[in-house]
Length: 266
Ligand SMILES: Nc1ncnc2c1ncn2[C@@H]1O[C@H](COP(=O)(O)OP(=O)(O)OP(=O)(O)O)[C@@H](O)[C@H]1O
Picture 1 (cartoon, rainbow, N blue to C red):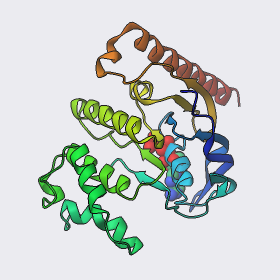
Picture 2 (picture 1 turned 135 degrees about the horizontal axis):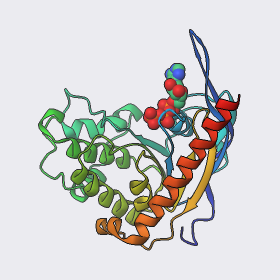
Picture 3 (picture 1 turned 180 degrees about the horizontal axis):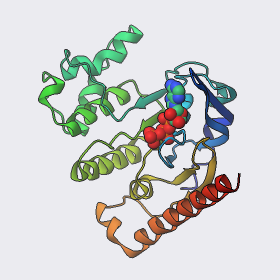
Picture 4 (picture 1 turned 180 degrees about the vertical axis):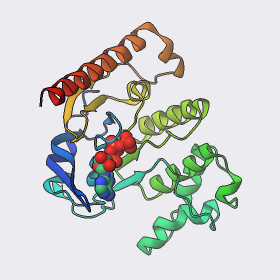
C-alpha cells in the first residue's frame, strides 16, 4: 500500500447475510467489517462458498444485507450506485449486439449520450481498436473480458468491483489480463476490490489481501503486499513471492484445520 491510500472509499460495517431457502436459512456472511481505501487495490480470497460473491454484491448494492451497511464516501448504499461498476467472471456481453453496442449499453440505460472519445481511448488502451463491429461470439474469452472492462470504465466509475474476472481464462491470457488491469489501475487510480481463488493472483495484484474464513464468511486475516510496481509476471517465480504464497496458504490451511477440529468436537 502506498502512503496516499489513507482515505476510506468504500466501507462495510457489521455485514451479515442470510439467504432464505426452502430448506432453511443459509448464513453466508457474519459480521464482516472492512474498509477499502481510496485508490487501493484490495483482493479478497477464501475457500469456495465462504461468501466472497455475497460480500462483493453487497458492496455493489446489488442485494440487501440482513444486517450491517455499505457506504461509499460515507453515503450508505441500498441499490446500485453510479460510481460503482461490477465486472463478473462471465463478460456478460449481449450476444445479439456488437462490441460497440455492448459498450454503449450503460449509457443507453442511463439515457445519456455515449462518451465516444473516452470509449475509443479505452478500446485503444485494451487493444480492441477495429473490433467494434464484431459480435461476442467472434471474440476470444480474453477479448470479451477486455470489452467488459471497457464497458465498465466507459462511464468513469471511481470503484471497480471484480468477481473472479479472469477465473475462466487460460493461464497465459490470465497473466496478460493481470498485467493489463495492473496498468489500468496505475494509470487511473481507481479503487478496486477483486475477488479471486488464486493466492498468486492476489499477491501479484493487491496492496492488501483480505482472507475470509469458511462459511459463514468472516474476515480471518489481512495481509499487506509491499512489492513495488509495476510488478512483472516473472515475479511469480521469485523466492520471495513463493514464500508469500506459502505463508498465506499455510495460514488458510491451519485455519481450516482449526475449523474442522471445532466441528468434530461439537
Ligand atoms: N441466492 C442464494 N440463495 C441461497 N444460498 C445462496 C445464494 N447465493 C449464495 N448462497 C450460498 O451462500 C454461501 C456463500 O456463497 P457465495 O457465492 O457468496 O460464496 P463464494 O465464496 O463467492 O463462493 P465461490 O468461491 O464458490 O464462488 C454459499 O453457501 C452459497 O451456497
